[in-house]
Amino acid sequence: MSLDSEPRASASVLIASHWLAEPLCMCYFPFVNSMKKIAVIAGDGIGKEVIPQAVKVIEATKAPVELTYLDWGADRYLRDGTTVPKDGFEMLARDFDAIFVGAFGDPRVPSNIHAKEILLGMRFKMDLYANVRPVRLLDASLCPLKGMEPKDIDFVVIRENTEGPYVDRGSVTNEGTDDEVAIQEDVNTYKGVRRIIRYAFEYCAHNKKADDTRRSRVLMSDKSNAMTYAGGLWQRVFKEVSAEYPQIKSEHMYVDALCAQMVRDPRQLDVIVTNNIFGDIITDLAAGLQGGLGMAASGNIHPGKTSMFEPVHGSAPAIAEKNIANPMGAILTAAMMLRHLGLTRQARWIEDGVLEAVRQKKTTQDIGGNLGTSEVVLWSTKSKFIAYVGDPDFHDGAIRKISRNSDELVVEVEGSTGTRFAVRFVGVESVISYNPEEMGLEALVEMETVAPSRRFVFVNWLEPEDQGGDAKLQIIARDFSVEKLMADG
Ligand code: ATP
Image (cartoon, rainbow, N blue to C red; front, side):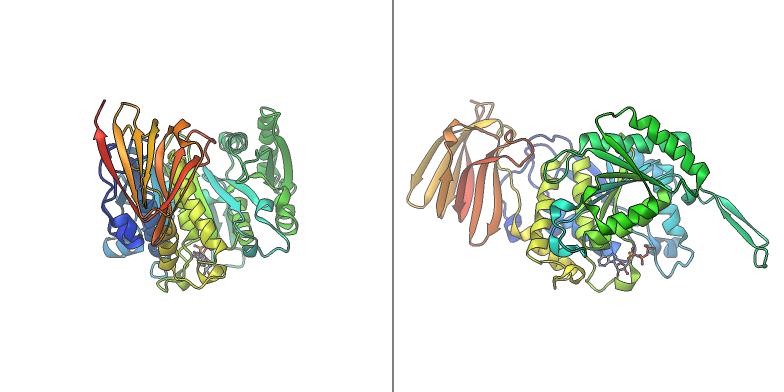
């Protein structure tokens, strides 16, 4: 999308909010110039319900993304026997910036062959070695533990994603007899262990908690007291890598003790790194702390390569096609993907919408609300949205003049190349301003559309950093229009 193109028409956006359907303005995001290409694979079961809903939310942000839908899953497999089309993984890596996935698993395919080939294929063949699973409590009411507040639970599990027992190596001898022996090999390579541990330290060094405090500790979890070969390697490499990060506190816990700790007191947890199977198990437990599987998001990441994002839950056939699946895990996964693609503001907007929906109990039944899957999304996209108005040089500009006449207010804005605009607000109810003529304008943001009034905010994106800008001029009005007064002055 070029910077000054029209917003993309989309049926889902029309459903999401009637405001969005109006030909209001030209929309763009100031710091992102390139369109990001995302492959969307909803898959099976509740994946087919939650992913389209999360896509509606992505579209409501007007993020500069191009979505391509792929029909990989049980339906396709049952139709023509295809699990992954020829060169499918090469195509994903070559043609897309990210992959947004639902879930795989369908009772009509008891072998689960398609799920294994698609999901594990993506993780293994695309070498998406870091499975990042944030565990964040959004509201105290969602946690089964007594007295836990959102500030108490904000940790992340970094799960190794390409090795362990999931490589499916092993053997069965004397099958069907009393002497049957099944061996499942747990593969741990030095390089594989080192890169995931290093990823965890890098994650710790470069990511903050939701309350903006620094992450400061990495805990490695294994079962080295019983599984000595693999555990020995993990122990040694953890010591080796942690020495490279003296500013980060390194800790160790056996995985069974960690499970007890998670339930007894999860407040000390920060970044946890562990192997494939322990990571799989402890993140289901961790999801319980944040409101259940319906709330948990994840990314399958290889830095610098096309990465894949999926909610932690599976296809949950038992609750499919009932409009009761919680879409929040998928929506938070969408936010995680956008942030990974550099679309931080859109990610924040999505997360804020989810937080608000949770606080107001506009949720599905599993977390205490009474809305259906699609109603949750309808509510969270309708309650507020972002629109940036103007033209490529609308940002980096400045407010030149503000004039008010009865219930009309006109803000004259000059862009960085000299283009002038008049932004005309009608039905003005209130204006709150903080010396707006002094500020360098970055964009006009429209927030919280509560009909019949709407709140518009001019912001300076540069301050404070990464907080959606500092509101310098806020106008509550019925509507607005933008007129170009002078081009390229
Ligand atoms: P697998 O984990 O092997 O894929 P599955 O698909 O049955 O198996 P999950 O999808 O992980 O398992 O879900 C287990 C249970 O958790 C579901 O039956 C359901 O009760 C609950 N659950 C999972 N996801 C959601 C969701 N998005 N909304 C509401 N409940 C959910």
